[in-house]
Each structure stands twice: as C-alpha cells, then as structure tokens.
Amino acid sequence: MSVPHHTAAVIGAGFAGLALGHGFTEAGIDDVVILERGDDVGGVWRENTYPGCACDVPSSLYSLSFAPNPDWSRTYATQPEILDYARRVAREHDLEKLIRFQSEVTDARWDADAHRWHVTTTSGELTSDVLVTAMGPFGDPKLPEIAGRDTFAGTTFHSARWNHDHDLRGERVAVIGTGASAIQFVPEIQPIASQVTVFQRTPAWVLPRMDLQASAIQRKVFRRVPAVQRAVRGAIYTLIEGLGLVGFVDTRFRAPYEAAGRFQLRRQVRDPELRRKLTPDYMLGCARTVLADRYYPALGEENVAVVTEGIEEITPEGVRTRDGVLHEVDTIIWGTGFDVPPKRQRVVVGTTGETLADVWATDTRCYLGTTLSGFPNLFTILGPFSAGGNQSALFMIENQVRYIVDAVRTMRAGGIGAIEVKREVEAEFMREMYARSEGSVWETGGCSSYYTDAQGRNAGLWPNWSWEYRARTREFDPDAYQLTPVRESAHAVA
Picture 1 (cartoon, rainbow, N blue to C red):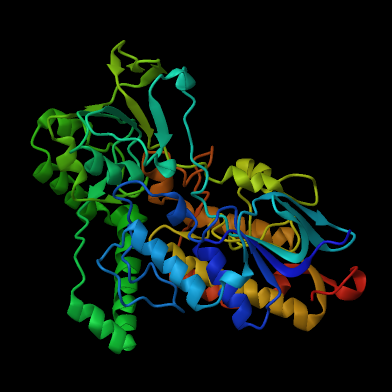
Picture 2 (cartoon, rainbow, N blue to C red):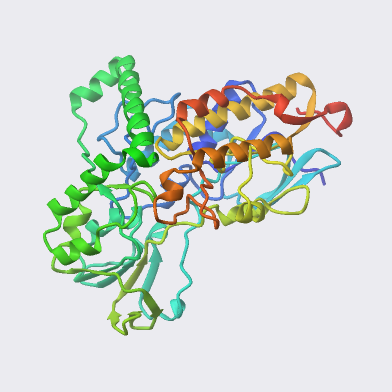
C-alpha cells in the first residue's frame, strides 16, 4: 500500500510549527504536513496549565512577527492568553489545514535509496522530502531518580501535567524543585494549602518582574497604528539585547544585576535564616534567572517551609531528608523541569542508525543549531546553539524558519534531492561556539544547568548577539552542504 508523500513534514504544532507552516505557505510550498501529538496547537503552552503560568519574556517580543497582537493584557502574558494567541494565529493564517492532530511520531528513518524520510505516527505512515523537528525543548517532564518515588500513598504530579481535579485546599503539599515553574505556582497554592514544604537544591537568582497591566489606550493605539507597536517591540528588543548579553552572559558586567537580586531578597525576606537559604552562591546568569515579585513573600508566610537538606527517599507518608526528618505530606508536586534535549528525539534515526537523542546525549554537534551531519534533509528548531540566552525564543525560531524555507526553496530551484552539512563545516562551527563560550557565565559561573554538557561546556545557547545569528541565517548557504542532485536520487523534491 502506498503512503502519502509531502515536501515537508514538521513535528510539533507549537509556535515553531506554526511559524514553519506560515513560512512554507508564504513561499508557495503548500504540500506540508504538521504532525501534532496533542489535540490542539500551542505546544508547551497547551501542556503547562499550572496556576500562575506565564511568560518571562515581554509580550511584545513573545509574538510572531507576521502576527502582531495589539491586545496583550499585560507586560508578561499569562498561559491562557498565549494559548489563545496561538490558536488565533493558526486560525487566521489558515494553518489548521496543515495540521494532523493526535499524530505522535513514533519512528522517522532516512531512506538512503529513495532520498526521503519515512515517518510512522500513531495515525498512520507518510514520507517526506525533508523533516523538521519542532518539538521544543520543554516537552518531556523530568522526574528525579529518588528512592521510593513510586511508593508515596498520596497524590503526585509534575507541574507540566497539573492535576486540576485534585483540590489542594487544606492539604500539606511538598514542592520538589525550585525552577521557573515552581517559582510561579508556589505563590498560587500557598494561600489555599495548610502547609507548603519547598525542597530546594539550588536557590535561583530572582529579579523584579515589574509586570504592568496594559491600558485600554495603549491597546487602542496599537490596533489603530501598528507602526507604534512595531516601534515598541524594536525598543524592547534593543533593551533586552543589550542588557541581556552584557549582564547575563558576560561575567564582567554582572555586578549591577546581582545587586538588584540581592536588594530584592533583602527587601522581601526579613528572616535572616530564610534569606541565607535563598542566597545563590553562583554568578547570576549561570542558571536561569527568574523574574518574580511574589515568590519571596510567599516563602515568608507562616505555612511555608524551605528545606535545603537533600532528599533521602520518598515514603508512603511523605519525604525523608538526609538528616532523618520525615516530612509528612498529602501531595507531592514535582517542579523538576524537563529532559533537555527531549527524549522524544529518539524517534528520529539517521544514516548510522543512531537517533537524534543518542547523538545529542553525548555530542551536541550541529550547524547553526539547524542541521547536523548524519541526518540528511533534517532540520531542527531550537537545536544546540540556536536558543538565545538573552532573547525571545520566537525571535530565534523565526530566523531558523527563514533559513529552512530558503533551503527547501533552493533545493527545488536547483534540482537538489538531498543535502547534508559537511562534517568540516560542522566541526568548525562547533569550534567557534566553544571558543566564544569560554569565559562566559554559563561555563565559569559556578553552577551546572541544562545549558551545559557533562564536561561543563555550553551546549545549548547562542554565545553572541542575536542579531548576528539573524544575519547568519538570513539565507541558506549551499556551500556548507554536500548536495545530491535529483538525477542521483530516486525522486525530485516535489
């Protein structure tokens, strides 16, 4: 039986998938399918529905350039508002017709003879000339390996799989992990729980959020004069670009930002012992810096305890720490982040039989965070060194979309059946990334994070200005690739 064939197959209908769908159709490449494992668009914003969930990038920047939203309600949009925006983008730009929902990719293999990808999903099979992984890095919740984790007699769930049917009112709640998600939901559950025990391994740097409500006048001006909104967006981009790279990446200029974090801590936490527990012992920017105004006050409430002793085991009654204390609780909420890179990438198999997850588990090699050797006609969104350490993910995504669409357009125009980045080009790019990362806060800041690999090297973030990344991805550079003409392949790029 024959299977459907497409010019491009995209895995994921989050913002990256939607941007790709729009980019391809604008370029006249209509034979595209977006494979989404869920029943709605939105990706991480569909999955994460915990109380208080919101973006930590200003709304004006957390928008697709082709779909400006004049109606953001505040400086930092909340999850329901962002999800509504994603749905509106899909609807207004007629992208829903490209999406195959409830179609989780279970296997994707490069067919060297046919020069195409063979993709198996939960809704059937298909082939495509090119495959794009747009799964996003925060799709697979991570649970730590703690003895007895499955023996707990109460209710447990990860913040990314929030159990809205479970009522926390009057309960004793354990929060394990103090990442960005926990910092947002702890202030929401503190007023209703009888006791919240926060198990902290590493304190976060917390800076003022300064989240303001957007006025009706502002929204009206943005709707009637789009140029004003574009100007505001440009100004915020410039501010974040300058302050972010200088203050959060370059260790020489961190002092004012760390002073702001220490002031926030002193101002909001009166108890000296609690303040000691919450004081980071590493440089700001080494791990993810959080913007929050309500987290510290919540931790200071009488029904909240911050525990810094390591966890020995989970028992049916609660959490036992290494000092022998058993903290009895009714519910455990895991705020322990995500598997980065996502384990879902193990479904993508390259020419050597290794999966994408296998390769990136030991060697985060790539070129521009978008292609890698051993995986012909495969493109990745937000792969290694394409996420901005100081910039909106959507800005970086749109740069990659432009590069990928131009690559496919070049293949069609030039009669190219397959492309694969040259190993020497890939190796030179990696040398450049490691050299640029030396001395950065990610590598010398005194902490470990999902930014770094087992050797302590930066393995994920673009170590330079984001506008420089934009310039390098402005158009496809065929000289960096081994090109296989259509006459040598079994078929043409349709």
